[in-house]
Image 1: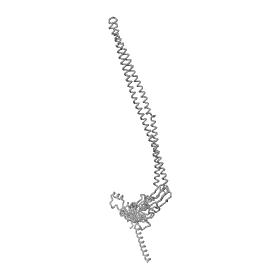
Image 2: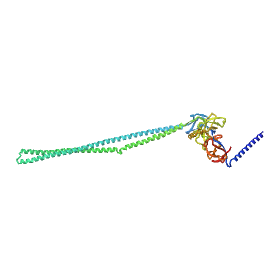
Image 3: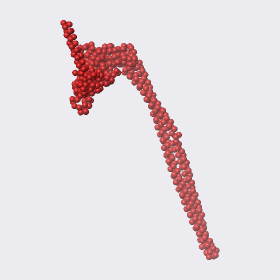
Image 4: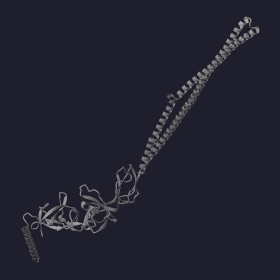
Length: 528
């Protein structure tokens, strides 16, 4: 029976081979020499669905490496590998006796520094008070000297006025005395003339004795009047001269007083008088610098030391930053902890992450929040639901693939490190920006449908993706047609078809087989 079946199968295969050979010979005989014979298909509207597989290892949702920030002997370790801890639980306690002693010393140093600051502040206050006192003293001295100077100037002015008045009086007195003497002299001259004239008459016997006596008496009276006028003038002039001398003496005294007052004022406002203020200002500046140094750097250094020790004391107790399971322990009670060295490792396994990569061609179709199916390799018949939580914005170092992270809730029996793979169902769709471009160009809604071609039609060479389009209206002789090499942008690649995002339209005829010898502008024959 087996031989019969084998014989029948052999005959069928032989017949098929003969038929194919005959067809091939017929095709060759029909085509001109050197004309490639190609198979074709039409680009059509449609959509493509595909499944992207992501393989990787399940990792904890979050991991915390617990380390110390200070050195010291470990007094307590709360937990062992496999123990569950909650966020905020005390994990490790480090001995702080030495730090507490350092804190006490630092606080004592700060207290001493504050005392120094108080002393420096008192020195500043005293220096400031001394400076103000020196300023007040000098101001009083200047004010008194100015007042005395002004009074002396006023006295000199009054004395000069008195001198001027005395000189005027002396001058007037002299003038008046001269007038009186001149008048008395004129009267005397007239009396002498009268006397001489009448003496001649008397001697001639023409004038009686009584008449002559009258002229003699008048002459004597005039002589006496002149003498009296001279005496009065001398007395008045002497008096006026005495008044002028007194005024001049007073002027000299007031001028001397003015000179003295001016000297006192000049000394009060001279740079030498400012020396006390300059010295007081220097003492104040020095005290302020000492106070500034003590109150800033000194206290700041003390506070910094205390703050540093306080921070170390705060870091003596180490708490869990996350809730999870202790998966690693490198410390025991009595050991010495060193800063930066991992002591415990906590893993949050309530959720697990599958990390893998996806090809750049499917990157536009995978989004955060997308639901996926996850299968652990050790549980092949068990499907879990996961969510895409991260798609890397940059490809991995090798290029062409991008990192992806899928998160799933741990049902309780999955351990980190299990290998798994996720299946992401994707479907071709036109992106919103492409739709906008199509609408802006006035295309109809039908133009927004997807174009698909058989996978075999899409070729890649020299980093370029292209298809050969047969120009069906270009037939010139026999069944020969012209092919055009058309660059395209490919989208999703399914089991049989590939999505073309740009470069083709529905109804275009593309080459799907027998690409040998094809180039832009080559004539081909389409195989029936």
